[in-house]
Length: 175
Image 1: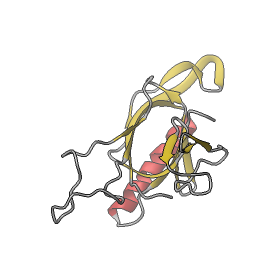
Image 2: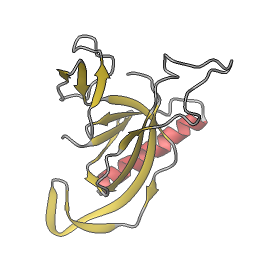
Image 3: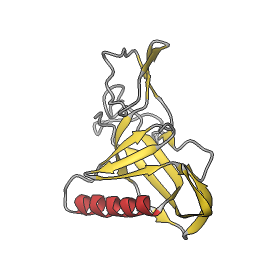
């Protein structure tokens, strides 16, 4: 469904669709010193170190099943990070398209969210991207409450939801 963000870790998955903010969740992370430099002091102009990472600041309401999945994803990802394993989640972002300048449908380098169709236009390709991301902090959960309507759910008395805020950063590894 367009405008959703899906996090997947192994067999676990959670979909964010009930946004608490009107702001788009994804933005570029600015380099702290303006331009990146190598450990030898030379200015980087190409490669993964030069690519600005994407940054997601997600603020949403979760129903019980998504809350359960997110707490399990966080716990397993954090345990893997602490033990030297693979802590990275797959993030399918349908909230905003990614523009890949100079690409064609045949040369697109980023994976595309399943079920979406890339568009070739303006000398490049627009697509909903798939990212490898990592948690910057643990998810911050609020108090459980009720919403009268939560996404496709609409029931008398409201739907029980939990607010969550979390921050993820792109690893800049194309998957």
